[in-house]
Length: 280
Image 1 (tube, rainbow, N blue to C red):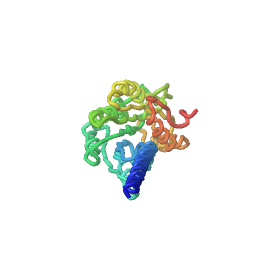
Image 2: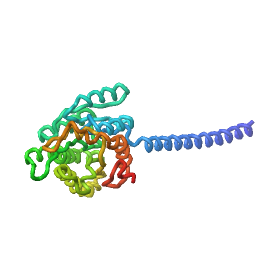
Image 3: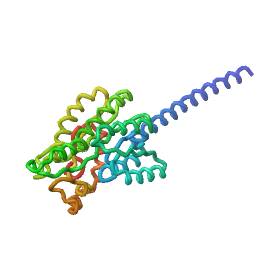
């Protein structure tokens, strides 16, 4: 009888050891599965601010962000398309809010960051995308109109980026993506010099900012696409603007550049050309 009892204890010890090994195995598999899920969905649950979200590239960035499970703050001076998009996202179980602001007005820009923090309590991604073109030669230039464009296309980018830096520092990191243009990397055709000038300015500042913020785990990117099929022609102003002539009608689908942007911001290349220029 004592011998049979000792044998039973030995069996129990072996069984316990086997069960313990199985627990560790299952825990490891669960951890690996969780890691794989996170690796496959790096944007899920992240909060993204997207300026110029109603049309073109901004809208495509928002659509991809929503599909990736991001919480979106959509920003535009023409809010109606963004409001409809936000409603669509919410109806599909996503999260999105809309902020109507004129980014040319410095006093209105803080509303973007305040709305994001009020809605979601953090900002993981800032997509500086809003912009338009003022078409005039240097000789034709109206300096007030050129400065207005710089407020939207350059100073709003700088302002919003500066405002999110302390938030991202406190969070332990973040990403700032600035949409430039291929015209920020080469000479522009006549009449596009002012537009190209603000794009060159973005490259100058944010390439330096990428170095300054690396230690805080804040990644800074400059995406410089070529021509995309957007509303840029219809929204252009200046003596050379012709809203009736949609020069962008045959340009590249912005959805292609948007997907390239999401791919590239997972890497470390600060300046890149999304779309067909980058794929050549």
